Amino acid sequence: SSQRGGATLCLLLPPREVARPVGQVKDEPLRGKGSALACWHPAEGGGGAKVLALEQGAAAELEKHTGRQAAMKACTIAGYEDLDSLTIDPDYPKPEVTEPGTLLIRTCAVSMAPGDVRVLSGRTTLMQAPDKFPYVPGGDSSGIVVAVHPEETRFRVGDRVACVFPEPRPFGALAEYRLAQTRLTAKVPDSVSMVDAATMPSSGVTAYSFKEHIRPGDRVVVVNSCGGVGCFLLQLLKQAFGASFVLAVTGNVELATSLGADAVVDRRAGAKWWEHPSLREDPADVILDLFGTATHWNAARSSAAVKPAKRGGRFVCIGMENPWPKVHHYWDAIPIVYSFMKRGIYSSMHKGTCPTHFGHAGLKVDVQERSEALLQLMGQGKVTAVVAKELQFDAASVREAFGMQKARKHSGKVVVRVADE
Image (cartoon, rainbow, N blue to C red; front, side, top):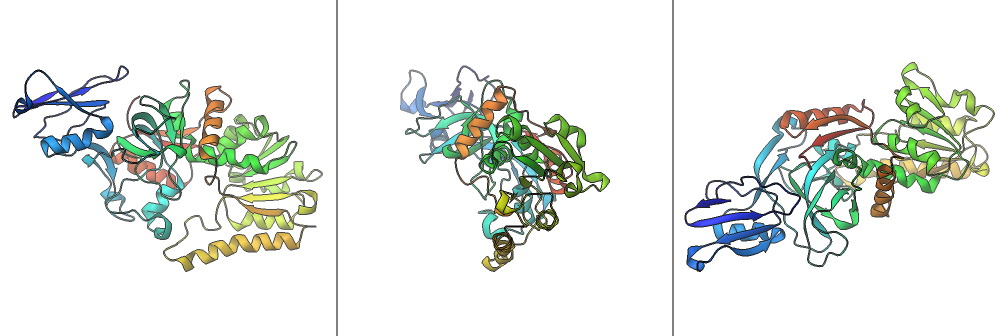
């Protein structure tokens, strides 16, 4: 609690929280983890504190009675390609739940994803431009629900959750608090840590969505198999999707083997998956390309390492031929769309020699259902999060996280721990 100028503010904390000083009303914004805000003014009559609002109304009440808006620490970036401007703002406005279908979450951990780097680059402003500068980066996170809308029935205060950003805009996660959409949020089992839970969206959801492309007994090749998506996918293919054989293409042979690959093509040594002995007499049923360049598609359609479409062969790609495209106007998107269309057209015209091509978007449907299914597997110890590096919530560490994500040389996920549970 804090007292200044005849007014007392205090936080009523839920049982699991620990009280801590929250600052002086007139000198600094209120910051804390309470579920209710109480305020007492002598002019309103004595006799103790008057409870004004639950946490979802706390910010408005604070502004009304003190003239100051509730604040939080947040990572902010002032401009495109301006990582030097990245800072931790201690007085960023704290969001509130005002609409049905949203939750206020106290952030515990945030995992990096390619979309975070694309936003910073300023190359994809058509779909991913921030509403304003400075903006708060980050899309995938885990945390504790601290406020819900009165109409909410699925989630309640105190739930441990992980949430995916509303595609294609990964904003708002690298802060003490964030708003999340209920349809993109899943409950986290008690046996899964908040750091591990943060790795699940959106990489884990995308990995789980490949289930629709796998048939029982499939022989599968996974290209770029030790990235964020690949580390989950390798563990799911056999035990959850029914694949019979998995060939991993990666620079981390040991990790791929430990995650369930039957054989590994070491790209560091210059090996090519389409020349692997296991595919000479028994070609793959499906290629899952998590990298996206034209090299692997060209190999699939011109070699006998994968079955043709008439024998059920498939090629599924989630990446683009250019991983960092420029999309400032609608016409910039035409070459990207065309690159996928021409593959589909070609494969439909060469079913006897070429696998069917599919472009795959893993975050379009059933995000909550897929998230909860994967988190249950993690809770049961059947799927393990792979954390490349866990970093602290300070400016230098967050800059390092962006650098690692842009370089794309790590295995698994880079995670920023914002706060302890």
